[in-house]
Image (tube, rainbow, N blue to C red; front, side):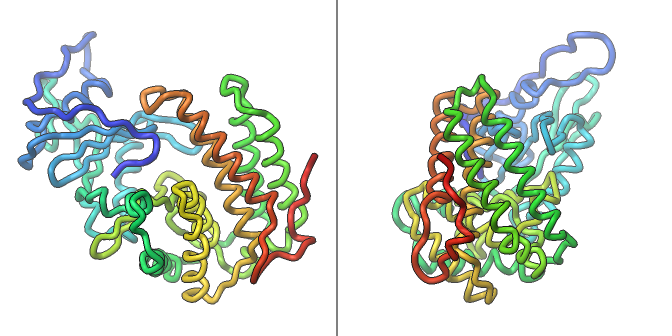
Length: 378
């Protein structure tokens, strides 16, 4: 139950001591480091556990006990995300539990208060003031993730069918938001513009020409293929989906569970279903399984009756590659989650893949008319 950009720290095997004494007079406020120290120890939990494994991600800490996973959001604030206050983290945690019940029923259990008493002792659900909140989940085995199956060569066409059927149950029952074609294109353009701005920051030292050529190709597609994109909004394909459909979020349990949907912004969950599948296909491709693109789309077409244009799928994959490049490079500002060279390499890989999807035409059934394909820039 962790995402790309995580790092594990050693498990705790002894009872936690008291947090550090207050450094000033007035109300004691434990630091994030003190909370993490407390939560790393087996004795901090109501249920017996032999050990606790702590996993740090860009925006949270996850603590794995023998049977559960506890997620503590960092006091993070950037762009659309604001976890800067205890109240904001409580609301976000509650939304996370509620929204993930849609595709991971029985996995997301509740929200647990982290408290601090007058002696500055921390506890989960004990006495004292509430100083933070944690999402409590049932722990799922990593060996049942799609990511693991892809890595060991065990992912099958039947797995793709099962996944799409479970995922499509969300879209089939979802309400369709009132998003005009103009608004849909504006959102896509805003996403491209934000990614370009971040990726071209000089401190990241990414190759400027690779960023600009992908951005240019995506903007060309937006300008030239308006009717194709407009039809997605006009035909009411857009709906509130998952928002972050990646192989590490798919568990082949009984029933199949898809965890970690985006909870912090409704607009990021309002998606074209083809957009979500294109993202998942891109991530499967990065794990050396490009055949999953056709498997996913094949089952989607069968269930939905929608036959998306190949050019549209390529555009969505390239757009996600640009977005993932942006998210990867921003990890450099959080060195605790990995070495800078790793994130720079990941960003460059995404940029390369994005350009390949935009620059290389697809042949075969459903191929886009030539006038809808993006023109290349020299």
